[in-house]
Image 1 (cartoon, rainbow, N blue to C red):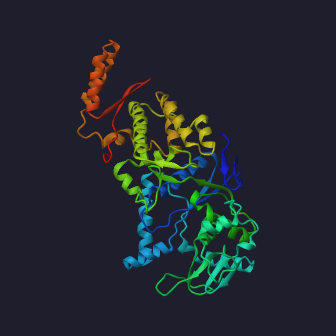
Image 2: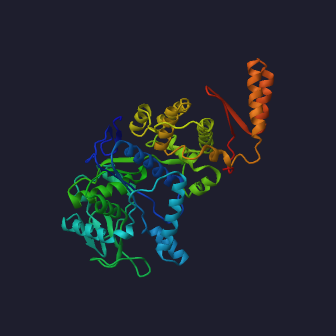
Image 3: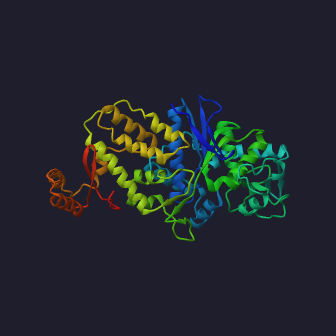
Length: 455
C-alpha cells in the first residue's frame, strides 16, 4: 500500500502520516450546531473527512472516528425561545435532519457521536483542572481561560495577537484579565438552559466542549483533528490552548482543514441570500452527484459550487454508471483499488486526481478484475454505490429505449459507410429526445441530459 501524506496545518507542511498507534488511528471532526437544516458548507467537511476515514480504513487495521453534535448554543436557545419549546426539541429535530441529509450524500455515520449536553460533567471537570493549573479563573459567574498562561497560544493560527483579537471579535468585558481571554463557563438566566456548577448555574462555552469530549473518548492526544478552515481560529486555536494546559500534551498530532465553499463565486452568507441547503439540492440532484461535486476540488482549496458543477457531476456519474450497466452481467473480481488510485488519494487526499484514475479504471471494466477495481475505487470515494439500473430508473419513465438503441445503431452504420449526413441526422434526433451520446473504446454509451428535479 502507498504511504499516506497529509498537509498538517500545525506545521504548514505535507508530511508522512505517523499515527501514535498504528493499530488504532483516532480522528475527531467538528460536527454541526443543530439549530437549523444543514447547508452545503456544512456538508463539505462531512464528505471530505468521510473519504479520509474510508481511506484510513484501507490502510490501517482499526480507525475510531468521532464527529460531535453541538446541542447547547445561543442559536439553539434563541430558536427554542421563538417556538416556546425545550432546546432538546430543536436539537433533536435538526440532528435527525442532518443525519438524513448526510446519509443521502453517502456519508457514513461516525463511530462516536458525542453530544455536548451529555458531557457536562467532563466539561466541569476539565475547567476545574484548568483553574487548578492557574490557566483559568472565575469572575462574576464566568470562568475564563487565561491566554497569557499558554506560551504557545497562536501557534496553530499563526496570527499576530492584534489580528487574533480582531478576528475573534472578542468582548472586552470588565471581568477579563486580558482582552484575549475566552469563556469556558457562563451564567444562565432563569429562562436559559443551565446546569449546576461550582460557579453557579450556567452553561459551557463552545471551545471547551470539544476538548472535553475528545479527552473523554480518546485521552489527551488524538492523531487527526479536522474541520473547516473557518474554525482554525478561534475555535481550534482555543481547543489547542485549553487542552495543552489541562493535560500537558498536544490535543492533536495533525490538523486538517477543508477550504471554504462559495456559491457562484460569492461567499455564502445570509446577507447575500445565497445560503444553499442540502435538502434543496437533493430535490434537484442525486445525492451522489452532490457528493461528487464536493470532491471535484482539492479539499484544502476554496470550491466554487455552481449549477454547472452539479450538472457536470451528473454527467460524469451517468458515464460511469453506463459502463457498469453495459457490463451488468459480468461478475466483479476481487474488489481492491489499484496502487495508482491509492497513490492519488494518499497524496493529501487528492480527490481530483483520484477521480481521473477512476475514469481510467472505467475503461478497463470489461473484465472481472477491471470491474472489481472500479467498484473498489468507487467505494473508497463513496461513489457508484447504486445499482446502475436504479441510477437511471427515475429518468427512464416515458423514454423510448428501443428507438434510442435503433438510432445509435443507425448512426454507427452511417458512420461506417461514411454517410455523415445520415449520422448527424440520427445524432440530432437523439439530441431532440434529450439523449447525450459518447463514443468510447467499448462502444457508444448514452444517457439523458441532466434535468434538474428529475431524480
